[in-house]
Image (cartoon, rainbow, N blue to C red; front, side):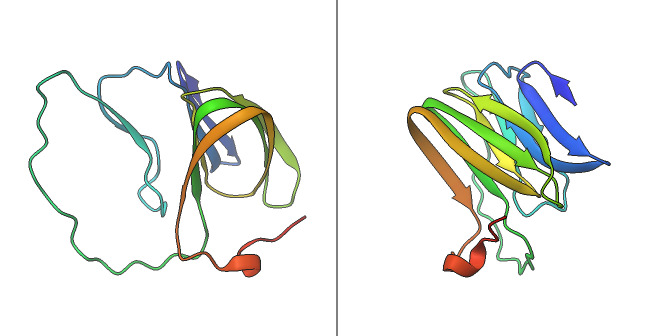
Length: 135
């Protein structure tokens, strides 16, 4: 699936990655992840004056079996190779400043093409070397 500023990389109806570019401009609350994902990713575009009612999130026990991570490229340029569950390359994408990618399943490889500043968000706690399977 691809629309202005949004690309969803799929294989056999499985989402492997969601890429949001800074050009995405759909007003309102836009979430792109299925409800069962352990990370929920969306873009909120509101006009000046919009207020969100004060709230807090309830403590809810969740069981998570896989790590999904989100990378937000603040500065620089990087290439991300996306692999399916068997290690076959699905696609390579180049991210530029303002781009965000959710790495949902499969594998990935990152090559930093220019000096970069990247925000990374994923589930914790980090399990060290046991957290990654290099292929």
